[in-house]
Each structure stands twice: as C-alpha cells, then as structure tokens.
Length: 183
Image 1: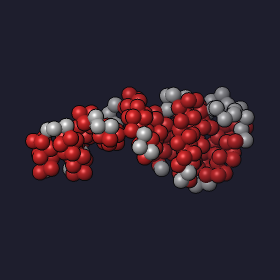
Image 2: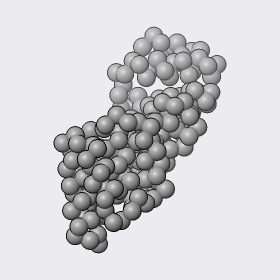
Image 3: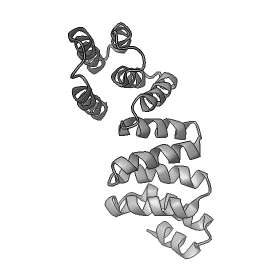
Image 4: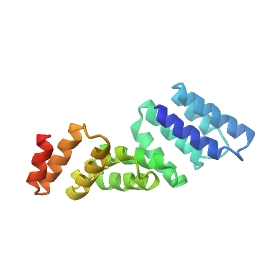
C-alpha cells in the first residue's frame, strides 16, 4: 500500500499543475482520504470535481481506492480506464497484469507485464510474475527465461527454482529440471 501511495502521489504532483484551485484541492483531499483508509469518501470527492471521469488523475485515484478497499473488480476496471486515459502510467499496467493473471487471462497478463517491463526493465520481481503466465500459456522457454532473470537477484528462492524446474521438465530438459529440483 505504501508503494501504491508513493506512485500515486508522484503522479498527482506531475499532473496537478494547471488544475483549477478547487479541483486541485479535491484531488489532494481524495488522496489524503485514500491514505487514511476512507476509500468511499475519496471516490465521492473525485466524482465531484469538474475535470470529469476521463481525467487520468481521477481514474487512477479511484483505481487505487477500490484496490485498497478490496473491490478488485472495480479496481481492475479503473486500472484499465487509467491506461486508456494515460498510457504512460506503468503501475496501472502492472496492477492490471496481476489482476488479469488472477482471472487466468494469461496472454493479457503477459502483455501488460511486458509493457510494464518496457518502462522499468530492471524490475526483476515482474519477471517472476510474468513467468507464471508464460508457464500457463505453455510457453516454457519464456517462462524459464523469466524465472532465470528473477533468480539472478534472489538465488535463495526455492519456490521460483521449483517453478523453473517444472518449466524445464515441460520443455523436455530433464537434466536442467533435475538440477533445479536438487537445489
């Protein structure tokens, strides 16, 4: 949640200039309400500003509010709307990719997480997440590649090593699978 709030806050700071004083105040108020856990109040404030439902700040704020509230279907919808409103918000791609993975929309998940990695190629944790989607798509070489990239940074993660071992096994590479399982 802290990382979500940092990313959202940074985005707000870059967008808020040029807003009317009243709208800027509403955005700041909604942000503060999300921080303290008053998600419904934050959404209500955003719905009252004059910038409309397509303003990226509004949609992104609502996506985070819905996610933190636990309303994951609305969060997914609003992360999608966020990307439609501003396709430069990398965090929206990451969140939508994770939600799509939970819905077993494997290819859509891969697409979103790949887009996120274009913004931040060194975010090795995303390789672990995307590797799961590749595995479920039976794209074992890509899954192995993602798990290997992840394991360069977290060599002690036996869970991911096991995932990679299974991918090796499915890719008909039993020796490599054995090495991962033995480790």
